[in-house]
Image (cartoon, rainbow, N blue to C red; front, side):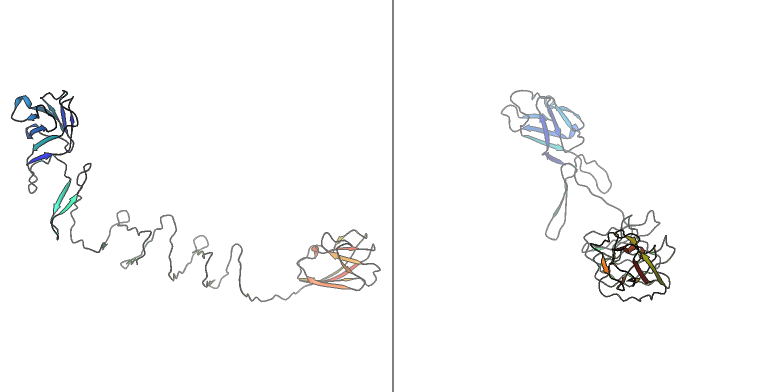
Length: 329
């Protein structure tokens, strides 16, 4: 089949013409090359003229005719005709020397071109499939099978807004999160977990959750790690104190504070200045003094909630005077 060659490289000094669309050419199939630009001898190759023949190496034709003169230029336009046997696609006979740049197939509105490119030609991937593969509106129905190593895997698009339906075929459905996290959006997910602490199911509630969280301890104990912030009303059962602590404490040296008592956890306390006092008692923290303490005259008292007796300190205006206290815990 005779064809005009459109893509080539002409080197007048080397007297070569490179057929850039071919990996190899056959000398006998090069019919004629005409330099349509020069005003000198225009036929630089003619298969019927021994003086204008040449030789071939891969896709490069070296001319016998001398083009290394001022009459020719590398940019000259060449008219090249090449003849190669048309391949027999039914029997796989014949050889295609030129890369295929496109195919033309019938279409509803006329012929349709399936194009390739000059670098790679036309890539056609044909796979023999047993059975029927049906596609409709770009939605493909695929049934996979086999062992884990060869089973078919499907990746869901990150911007998918559709519905994914998965059928476990009566078996167990395994979901691999790829060492990442599996997120379920806008769904009521009912999960029953179990096992020992190391393998028990753990659920993290979103920090911006506005829903209702129901937790069942299954008759055991519910443990919460970290700080829990509660908004709204919380009703708790108050524990009634069951132990009474009482005692008396004197300030040995006036203007020198003392601790009310040694460490003892309590809930509340009443402190009363002794009836025999002639001066003033000062009640406060570790910085208590006559300048900042709560003043108690003889027989006066003060009551307040308290976590530990050793957090109360006393001072006095008169050495040796003190208080009596009564606490519950």
